[in-house]
Length: 125
Image (cartoon, rainbow, N blue to C red; front, side, top):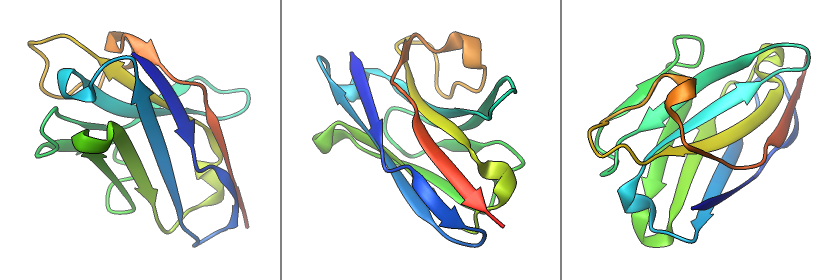
């Protein structure tokens, strides 16, 4: 599966952005999906994950209550709605997919098998 993320940009603190990740080459019904971010000079950080049906979701504590992950399997797309953005949310955001049939939610970055290119988010104070 190939993943294409988009929707990044520059916003002021308190603003919102909607990231999208469109998959091709396979249906995302087969995958647990997640978002991971990496700020300049820092390591990758788990952000959120959603199970295959979209019913179960998980969030990193630092984004809980502000970010919302969702998926539209009919459109082969995963979303990350980001509200109340803070300067510390600035990073490249990556969508990722895990095709382990036993996995329900994947919160460990190393478990993801497929990665899209990043989309840059910059939040100014």
